[in-house]
Image (cartoon, rainbow, N blue to C red):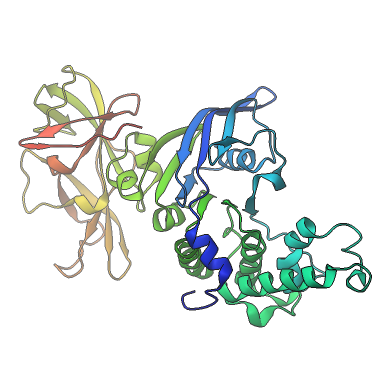
Amino acid sequence: MSGAGAGPLAESHARSRRGAVSLQGITKSFGAQSVLKQISLDIAPGEFLTILGPSGCGKSTLLRIVAGLETQDRGTVAIDGQPVDHLRPAARIIAMVFQSYALYPHLSVLDNIAMPLRLSRLNMLQRLPGARYLHPGTRRLEEEIKGAAREVAAILRIDELLARKPRQLSGGQKQRVALGRAMVREPRVFLMDEPLSNLDAELRVHMRAEIAQLHRRLATTFIYVTHDQAEAMTMSDRIVVMMEGVPLQVAPPKVIYEDPSDLRVARFVGSPAINVLPGRVESRDAIDVLGARLQLRSGLPAGTRVDVAARPHVLSAASRPDGSTVAGRVVHVENLGADVFVHVGIEGVAAPVVIRHDPALATAPALGDPLTIALPAGRLLVFDDRGGRVPISSGASVEKHVHV
């Protein structure tokens, strides 16, 4: 999207540092079902924040409360330091892009993009057909509105589509029109609710890059809701991982992936999924994992049950067994070209352990082969029986633990 349409609209967005959003104690229930539970969150001007979680966790409800489409039971929403709970959606100067494009099928692309400005700048009489000839100033306002719509279309590289109707557009083009209709209002905050879920896999990848570039160009606050971790990891400044109406962790993507504060976060983010092995604290300096005695200082009492987790890329095949290895047998091999993932069945573990095998090193193990896995103590994550992260040290290396 670079190089097109760098007009006054884009420049005004780039200069703006509006869009700070503050949520304090947001609670929402539908009947007896509690959907949001005391959510407090501060979003900086110009930040790209993604709310990530499974279906039904409350993320879309939270977005609709920010937009003013739902009313919270308790708590406050403020934009740029001013409470907006009493304001209707249009008065909050926000724009929302939905999962469905919600385009007017009988209007051209130009008129779809221009519609928000017509509704806000023209009165009912001025919006009637032929009004430009009857009401002084209407023709000038119409030209200004169309000019703003054309500028937005140029930024989104859909200016050649302005005369088309929605039925003549592809899914990606419809998504750009929906973005254009949001942009034309010059909102303080963009709210996006699963905007790419109706696109095919290839187009989703392309549109992720388009939206990320658009955010950098406009320098406007984006709040993005998705259940797709790839979208969250590739576009966000920070991610809120939400489950059952509660934010489990709020952090940059790298921290969410490498330093999860909760086992549910660790399991939800990452593909292939993180490996989780049962462990037991043997002493203040050691944890037993399936017979392997790992030199890990946890500070937990001896006999405490823990979960020990490792991403596939930190595990590797060991040349020979020792006190820090576990043995199993290959049950599946995934060859993805640049990566090979070997699934190893281990007695006492319900799911196979997945390790990343570099195809450049040697031939991948074959189905049924015995395989010994090295457990690198310094790169393992430990969680208590409630799923909370346990800070550990391994030798001279101490793990960081991020609290939210």
